[in-house]
Length: 75
Image 1 (cartoon, one colour):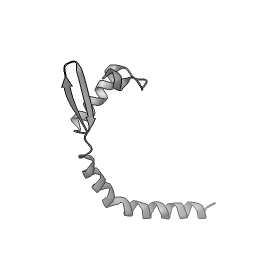
Image 2 (cartoon, rainbow, N blue to C red):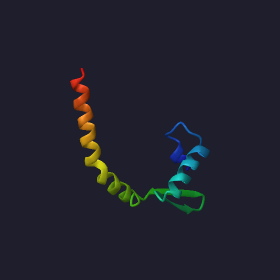
Image 3 (cartoon, helix red, strand yellow):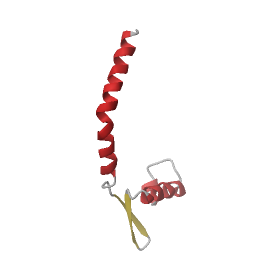
Image 4 (cartoon, rainbow, N blue to C red):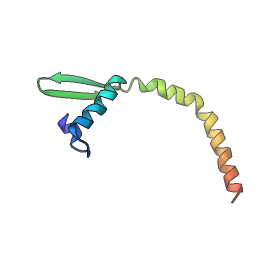
């Protein structure tokens, strides 16, 4: 964990809390080898979120394009 927190301006405790949230969301896997904790990404749960986003993408893109056109016409 220390190596994981080092590049960021956060304490080891804060980094540990963030990792715990990611573990609870099943986005990272932790392996403990002696005193070392190895953390790796498991992106599989993101597939469901991607599918949900894709469902609404065309809906929102058309609305945002219309908003953009409207705002440009108001200039």
